[in-house]
Amino acid sequence: MLGMLQSNLSRQGISTVTKGSCTACRKPVVGQVVTALGQIWHPEHFVCTHCSLEIGGSNFFEKEGLPYCEKDYWLLFSPRCAQCNKPIMDKMVTALDRNWHPDHFCCAKCGRVFGEDGFHERDGKPFCRKDFYELFASRCHGCNQAILENYISALNTLWHPECFVCRDCYTPFVNGSFFEHVGQPYCEIHYHKNQGSLCSGCEKPITGRCITAMGSKFHPKHFVCAFCLKQLNKGTFKEQNEKPYCHACFAKLFG
Image 1: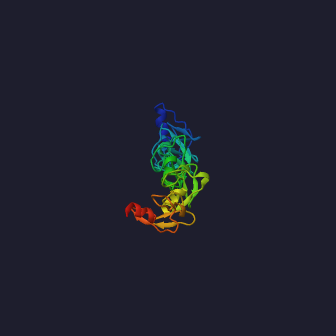
Image 2 (image 1 turned 135 degrees about the vertical axis):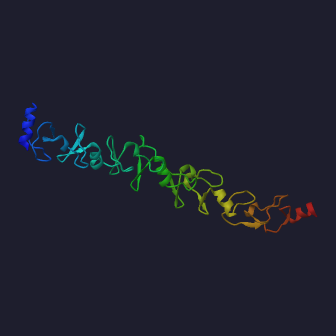
Image 3 (image 1 turned 180 degrees about the vertical axis):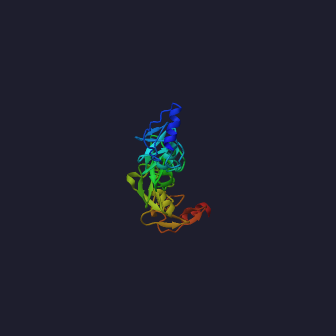
């Protein structure tokens, strides 16, 4: 049959010199030929190894000596994007031991592509600086906002330095000295105020002996007659309009 074909082609003036054997079918190649991968093929036999589509004059890729069309090569062998799982055919970002399309390597919370600040990782996911601290940073016990830099550790929790102040007057503590009441820090005055241990006479803390009278507490020397200002030594007094008076002044004023 081959002899008859060569005879017919020769009568038509077409060269019938065999160019070799086709890599696919192992039969002689006469006429059109495809030379690729250091071998020759019948045009109809030079096809994609995966989908069998005739490659012809289209671009192709080689893998382990076999030809693949562009589509199947990318589908089979290109890296996959960790976000969309589609082939990466151009630029690629490699991070967290995975590959990403550049526009898919973004914050797992807000979806914003990372800029010069880079990213932070948590449980294998990338986050922008803002969202990372918003989600995972320790919280200040004073304002409940994320602690990004300096902090103070006190009362078994953390504080921004500017938030660690008296919870009543917001005054910073001198030399870090403070008083604790119900888990909160206070200056000395407001600690005693909350404890009910401020002298009603001088409004300073009572740390020793005190007199309790009229629902308040007093340093002994500050529990005095509201009129003559003499100390009510034995604690005996008369009360009028929530003020203490010695017996003599009470009798003089209200007798």
